[in-house]
Length: 237
Image (cartoon, rainbow, N blue to C red):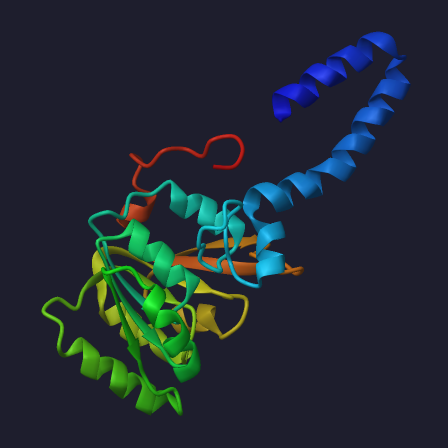
């Protein structure tokens, strides 16, 4: 698409005076860019389907697009994931990671999504009536696990602020905690005493009209920022 546009504009520049050619180029750029973003990111399709998908209809996490672009260039094949809040992201992480342990608080939503989970996703319903009840239910499930350290922990549901200390206590030494909608829920204050570093990914998310933020909290040696990770390519995957 970019190549076609560039070739077309070169021809326009040869045929028309510079002020007119530039005005045409600027107008096309201003009008076409939002449509290209919406199509290539999957935002257009997500808006109509009312769920997070890419342009081909495949599941995406409901994180900001800058964060998803960043995660797509990381290798999670040998990583263990724990997720608070299930859905499209659970399916996506199941395709990316070795194993996924997901906790969901909404019983109706749990019943709806459980049949869609890949075989390496262990989905659990826990009561979210109040924070102590929710945390106790999560800890009861964790007590049955042979390994309770996770390379990736996602806080995207349940009692988000109250889950911070639990997430930190189960984070692998080189792991990362992903917090969605991090402009709220007092995430910054909750992580203040943890000595973890933070990177914010502001931007649009699937099917949403307003910008939001997904943040990563991580120790200094986290695998997520290893120099061996590839740089971003130009354009969408």
